[in-house]
Image (cartoon, rainbow, N blue to C red; front, top):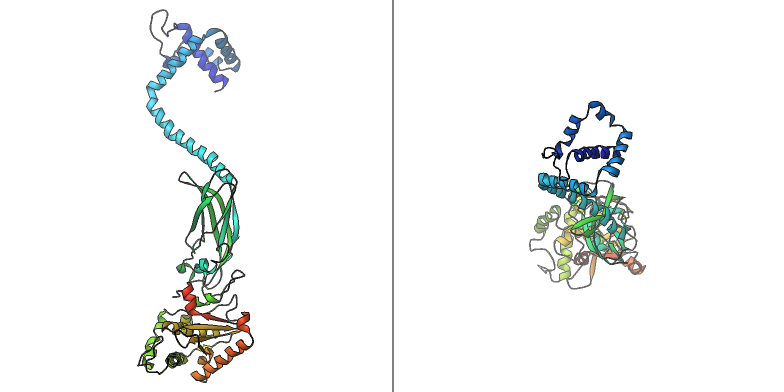
Length: 449
């Protein structure tokens, strides 16, 4: 309150003291003075000129000094103050209480909590992105936890939180890609003077990315919270630029990842276009087909080879054209899925190998994809429990001049033996990719519409 306002109030009290006794009773007629009408009484007894003149600061200062130095006693001031408090309490105690409690106390509590407690917690926890993946290959993305399980930290990202305080803190880290993923959440405890890395899984939603024809820019969102008193206190917020690649593109992965088992996401035995071929196979093998059974043959190898031959003959009639591509399977290359090969009637070597492998897996044959420098073909176990393989040059099924099954087998065996002689399988330059082993490991086919 300013000196001017204090002066006016005390001036009123001065006149009250002049006409009242110590107990607030008029000395002449014994009637009580109504404190609430004090301003009215003053205006009624003072002339307008005098009232107006008292607005000057000089007069107010003079009255202020006079009242405090000469007119008041401690006893009277205590009495007046208590009378005023009693009046306020009687008039509006309940309303004041609830107003103050609801609008002031709660707001004050929240303000103190937010401004002091939360800042204190945030000060204890120092957070930053420890590692991040800036390319999301939708062909593999939802299998990242398995793909990177032997790494120190799983991908796609990790947030490191250092606790620089003296208290234990529960934390939760969230990450997501707007419009493309669910929110990945991971939680844990960071001990005093310790640090932990938290790596939430970002699970991409197929319905959101299957339409992609080219890489799409995205902004990965990352948040870290301290969990205190059932509240999430934001201690870290960051976003970073990344790209999402189409599901038919082999994008880059971290160095040290053997991508070969993950080729099997392209081997898709359960597609309708694959299972529909079964009816054609059935017409060619009336005695039965599927898996390791003799049917009308003397040896298991003969029975299995016959089933592969019938698949070869069915696909020969599909009118598929071979498209040469020595970079097939290289990083950054698009690879058609079997269903797309059957639709477009075009395939390079690795796409044709995946088509054959998909059909053979669908009828229960243990199949492998053989990848050699610049080329790929298929092989299969001749017996279920054996370790002998036969091979097929799948590209010859698309030859303009029909090529026999036996010729395609001999060509593949020749290629395989050459790689063995050159030591390429031992060096890792060439690889045999087992579909069965990949499935056992957890590599599942992609679901392509």
